[in-house]
Length: 274
Length: 69
Image 1 (cartoon, rainbow over the protein chains, first blue to last red):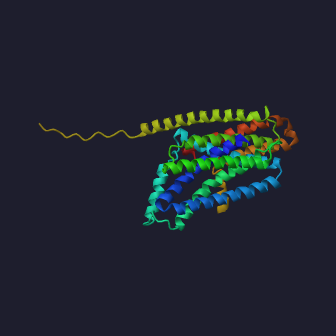
Image 2 (image 1 turned 90 degrees about the vertical axis):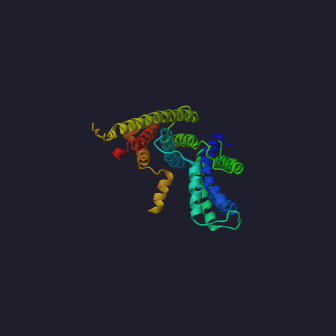
Image 3 (image 1 turned 60 degrees about the vertical axis):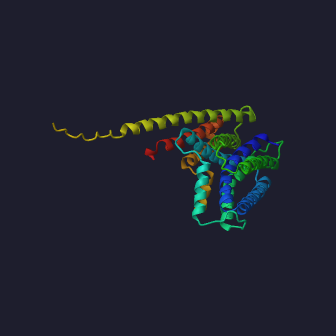
């Protein structure tokens, strides 16, 4: 069991599952639970198939050094995207993900589609497809992380399939946790600190991406695997500094906008005749 | 074309990050394969970290100062 890989997959999957859960919940409440759950299960089966086939193919056919380089670069791109969005959200330059707003918006769209009898358990193709699509799209990122982390985390002592199994276990636990919490609360999971999770995952992906890309180019990191912690510290420090800088920039822009506003014209005074 | 765009959006979705990371990778490949640049090989690691951080700063600057887009 590789705990670092499982933890990274757990956090990344939790974020994506929370987003997918919101849509499944909307379909369940507005259309019916049968269509919503069937759609989610079908998507989960598609994703499992994808991880199994792609994962096994990568494990068996591609040499580890080439794989680490390619996957390292992909993880860097993926991680920087997550990190950028998280930093923009922390600094206030981008709106935070609002699960409640997404829930209400989707619910209104489904209601506008026509009268639906939510108490009916009749299979609804639209509800099934909406649930399938949302779980598949959100889950694709999870599958990507599970495969890349799992395959690249292999060391001389740990096999690549063990890496994929660890990552898949992390993702599975996150999925189960989200489903359990969601099933009990039956409301969008708006209290989950999505941005913090995305920030943590962004840091982890960028750190591993840098480490494996470096190894792919033959870089011998000082302290070996322990250098991962130093990379985490570097990226954390840089990210916090960037958040502070962007907050200051936003404040300056707001102050300038207020200063540039035209002064309110005084109301015309009536001439008072004696 | 649609498929390429979908893959691009799925993996990165940001041209500044893509160009920054690819430039870093190209320079690292040159350092590793051109014998004249071999003395720089010891600096590959710091250069990679610097390249990643520069890409992040560049893309965030682009978002913070949309006027210059």
